[in-house]
Length: 353
Picture 1 (tube, helix red, strand yellow):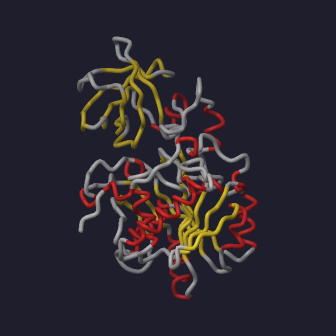
Picture 2 (tube, one colour):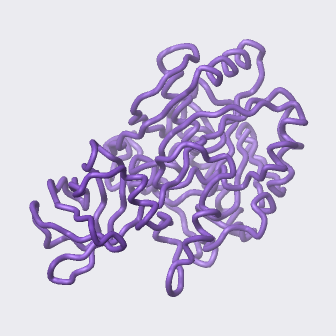
C-alpha cells in the first residue's frame, strides 16, 4: 500500500516551536529512542558522551550557512523577498522569490543594500523558483555577505527588525567551515567546542562530510502520495579521510553515528554504490519508509515538521525495511509534546539507536 503524506502528520502546539536557541547550545534536552523496543529516555544534550560508546564514529556536516535572504524592489516600488539557492554560473543565480507573482522574465530589480547591483529575472521555473542575472557579475558569497540576512525558517518569527548578528552566530554549527548552505544542519547546532573535546577524550572519532543544505532538504512535500515527491539536488562531498575512517569502523564492528539527516543522506548516497569511498556530486536521494540503511547505525537529529521529508527519513530509520517506524516516531513525538520538548531548528534533540 502506498504511503500518504498525511501519514506523517501530527499535532503540535504553536508554543512548542522554538523561537530562539537554548541559552547554552549543549543544555537543550535530548530524547533517547531505542528503536528495537520503542523505549524512551530523557537527558540533556551534554549527556551525549555517556550515551555513546567508545569507538563510535560521529559523522558531522561541516557546511556553513550563508546569509542567503535578500530583498529587492521593483520599479513600481513593490517589495520582492529573495532566497538564494545556488550559483549556476558567474552572475547567474537560482533563487526563490516571494512577492514576484506579477513579475515577468526580463524585468530588472534593484537589490537593497547594493545600489550598484541589479537583478534581471531571466526565467520563471514555477512555484516561486526563478533564475536571475546579477549585474555586474560578482561572487554570490561576497555579495550576500554585504546585503544578505540569515535564512531563518518562516516558523521563527522575530518581532520588529531581525537581530541578524546574533542569528548569524546561533544559526551556525561551531564546526561550520564550507560556505554554501541556505539552511542549517540543525542537529549540529547543539555541539560546543567543549563537548567535541569530551567526545574525543571518550575515544569517539569525529569525521566530516559536506552537504550544502538547500531546497531538497526544506522544500515541503506537496504530493499526496509520498512516492510522488521529487527531491531537489543538493551538493555533497565525502572526503578521503572520512571514507577511510568509515571503512575501518565498519570492518571493526564500530558504530557509525550520523549527526543529522543531511549526514545520513551523504552516507547512504555513497553506500548505495558499494563500500565507502571518496565521492562528491549531487544527490537527490529521498529516504522514506520502507527504506533500508546500508551505512548508518545510530542517528542524532532534531524534532521535524509534520509531513516533511526529514520526518519521513527518521521514521524509516526507526524500522528499516518496513513502515512500522512511522508508529514508533509518532509515539515518541507525542511524548515529546506531552513533556514540552522544544521543536524544530532551535529546539531539542533526539538520539535514535
